[in-house]
Amino acid sequence: MPFFYYIPGLRPSNNLEQHLMGIDRVEITNGYTHPNEFLYMALWIVGLNLVAFGNYYYGFFNRPGANKKSWWVIHVLVVAALIYLIAFLKGYNMAHSGNINAAMPFSESDSHAFAFESALLSVPASLILTFILKWGSRNNRYVPL
View 1: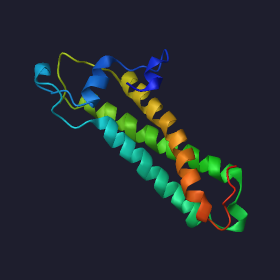
View 2: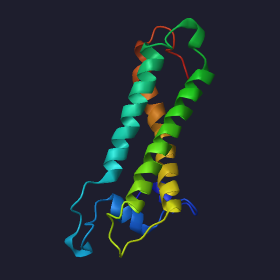
View 3: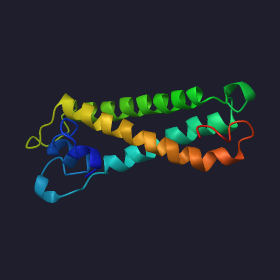
């Protein structure tokens, strides 16, 4: 269970967590038979950050006028907002698809908590990918630090 689940108000219900981890949608006793959605969100986080910061350090923003920390922060916030949207829609669609176990109900607020947690995890991923990608950049090699 991620760290953010222990912060009061951010912890989605155990039902959403079990559903996202792949609990069987027909019979709970069958165990985890479906894909783990947390792994898919991790792939979204890494993929979107690679695209955004690849663009920042080697694409359109690799020019003298765009080597400011404010542009880097905007990239971090845009990626976090996209991750929030993807995670919320994933949880919301699962809750309203009717393809969940009736013994494990969860609500829209659980989807918001999952999306907020995913967006928060996107920020350290942005920082890690920044330190990996920035060394080859001609103009932005010192941004953000």
